[in-house]
Length: 229
Ligand code: GLN
Image (cartoon, rainbow, N blue to C red):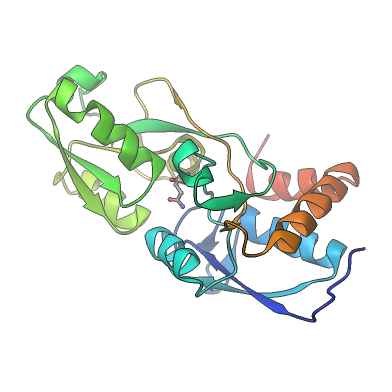
């Protein structure tokens, strides 16, 4: 195990609704792959932390202002973020997908012409939607949380939304009445983030712990808890 030299309690921010990575269960507890991985790594490395679910864009802002020490929120390791954040090694591969209402006849981006499309502020899905908006002639409306974004599609406010494939796929498997008509766009893997230069020892412990929980089977056990094989 590592050393918690300073006896410091790290403040880690996360998203509010991003199942199966972080979400509130029926008992009102925050659970999910990210939180279980963090817990297992902290145990392995011997550091203390507290998790605060503030939402994705709020977590990024808190990280940048030094209000929190780290963010675990299904955060994609993008070229842009690497400029300002130190990331752990990737711990989960992801990508972005377009979701539409089940039964919708939209099956291609072309059919989004003249439509309103929902995206979540500050996410890779939002960046992707905006990158193709002019080409396909649609408008992007931003939402604060994934649940607000899904609601926009369910209510017909938006014709589609762009979300991380494993996340929306999980919700669909749990009964969310949306569907993924197109293939997944290549996206970045998830990593644990700290502000550049701010907590190198934390990134280091995360990486060592991640390696250990992969080696001892804990990482796979966590994935299996949330994702049926
Ligand atoms: N993976 C996406 C990103 O990093 C979305 C993360 C999230 O919404 N929690 O932009």
